[in-house]
Amino acid sequence: MSFEELQSKVEQAEQALEARERSAAADWRQFTASWKEAWTPGRIVLAGLASGFLAGKSRGLQRAGGDGGLKLLLGMGSLLTAKSAESSADVARNAVRSAETTAEAARETVQAAAAAVPPPAAAPRQTVRIATSPDELRRRGSL
Image (cartoon, rainbow, N blue to C red; front, top):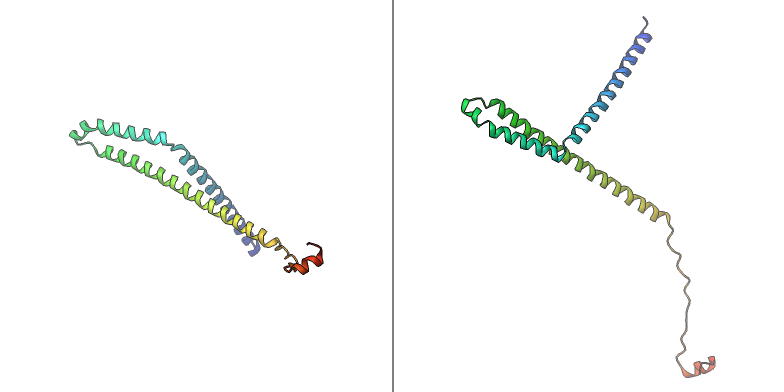
């Protein structure tokens, strides 16, 4: 095999790897989006109620000394709730960034439009003489 053929094989492998990376990134974005959409406020409340019910029922298990699994379960519920709140905060941050970007673009558009419009031309000055003496008024026929 020649050196050029080896180089072409390496390039093909790199392109295949990049395609798989893009596919994996798209799959991950889809997964995170559907995960975030699944955690609605109602489901979060239900998860809290279920973990509270299990905590209340575990009093008998605590006496028996088997509360390690329950602590793990309650910790996971808290973790999921915190993660949901974090994702909501991320969505809010992205919305703020988008609004700021849109406002900045609008500001630049307005500035560009204002720069494109020429300033109004100044009207030529006219000198107006006001007659103040009665003789001048008689000459003009005003008296």
